[in-house]
Length: 139
Image (cartoon, rainbow, N blue to C red):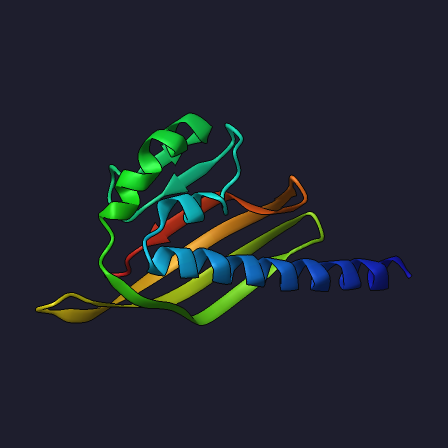
């Protein structure tokens, strides 16, 4: 019986996290740092790593100070979509590993970025929040 209850609890957690991931990608697409920041924990345990060595945030204070500037360096996205997803965890913590296709367009150019984004989500403050994120650009 416990396995069934655990499986049902994880299925619900997975559904909720997938909705939270979609909201994060939608906010990222429009480069809205305040909206994106709402997807991340407000604790000092936060760790976010980007594609460049300087792109790293540890804890609430750095996130509050640096997040908007970091997001401003993103291309003018038109869409960010997962092309492959692996997801796991349990009812308390869920990890998501996405291969992403980010389409962007400026007045003179357009392109596609292939990215890998791994997030770890924890239920806190009554909702799912990112406690760790790692963005990579495969070469």
